[in-house]
Amino acid sequence: MTDLYRLLPEEMEKLVIDMGYPRYRADQILLPLYYKFPKNINDIPQLPKKLREELAEAGYTIGSAKETHRVVSEDGDTTKLLLELDDGSSVETVLMQYEPKKIGGHPRSTICVSTQIGCAMGCVFCATGQMGFETNLKAEHIVSQVIHFAEILEKRGEHVTNLVFMGMGEPMANYDEMIRAVRLLTHDRGFGLGQRHITISTIGITSGIDKLAEEDLQIGLAISLHAPNNELRKKLVPTASPHSVEDIIESGRRYYKKTGRRVTFEYALMKGINDSPEIATELAKLLHGNGSHVNLIPINPTAGDFQRPSEDSVLEFERILNNGGINCTVRVEKGTEISAACGQLRTDIVG
Ligand code: SF4
Image (cartoon, rainbow, N blue to C red; front, side, top):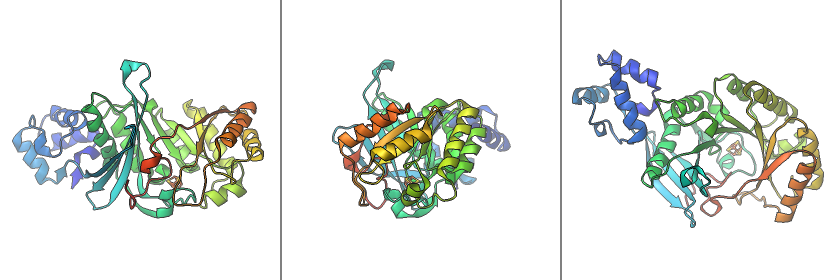
C-alpha cells in the first residue's frame, strides 16, 4: 500500500500519466489532499470513479495515520495527539499556540513534529531517549502529523504557521524521509508552508547538518548542545562521542555560511548539572563571535532524576551569556502538564 500523501507533485503527475490520465488529474488529487483532508480516495469526488477504483486496485490509499487519542492543556494552548500508523505503531505530535501577534489576529500555531518512534540517542534527561529506538517514520507519517492539526485548525478558521522537527526522534537519523516530508510540506503544489517557517532540530549529527546545508532549502537549524565541553556533554548525551563540541560548533558555522540562516543552540538547563555561572561563562566563550543564538530550556519534569533550576539561576545564566555577547532567550513553557513539552514525549504514557 502507498499513501498518496507520500507522493511529491511530480511523482503524482507521473502516476496519473502512467495510468493513462491527463496531467491535471494530479492537481485534482493534490488540492483536496492538502486543503480538504480526505480520509479515503472516495472522498475526492471530482476524480473520475474509474481513476479512484484504479488507484485503489494499484494499492494507493489515503490516511495511513489515524488519531486515537487527544489531550488539550487547561489553557487550550497545547494539544497532543496520539496517531496510530498503518503498521500498528503509534506516534505523538504536539500543537503549541501562542498569542496572536499582528498578522490577521491569528495565533502562531507551531507543530512539534516527530520523525522516529523512540530515539537511539539516549539523552539521559529525555523521556523519548529513555524509550530507546523503535522505528523510523515514513515521510507520509510525518506529513500526517501536520495534516491532522491543519484540519483541526481549519475548523477554527486558523492554520499551521510553523513547524519544528523537535518531537520524538533525531531527524538526521531518518534523513531521507525527513527531507521528503519537508519537500512535501513546502512544495507550492503540496502543503505550501514557507521554508523559513520550518526548523530542524538535531543533537549534533554533523554529517546530517552538512548534508542539509547542501539542500536548496531555507530552513532553520537548531542544534541541541546542552554542555560547553565534551566531558559534560558525554554524560548528558551518551552517544555524543563521534561528534565533539568543537566539531558541532564548526558544522553550525558551515551551515550559517552556506545558507545565511542563523543557527540556534538549544541548551536544556538542569539544576546542579549544567547551570552554574562557571559553565555559563565557558559557554559564552565557546560561542563568542559566531553570531549564533542560544535558547535556554529549563528542563521539564520527566521520568529521570533531573530538576529544573530556580528562576534566579536561569536568569543569572542568561545574564552571563548576554554579557558575554551571546544572543540568548529562555523558552516559553508550553504543555508541561500534559507531558507534551520538550523531552516529554513517549508513546506508552498518554496524557
Ligand atoms: S533529546 Fe532528542 S536526540 Fe536526545 S534522546 Fe530525546 S529525542 Fe533523541
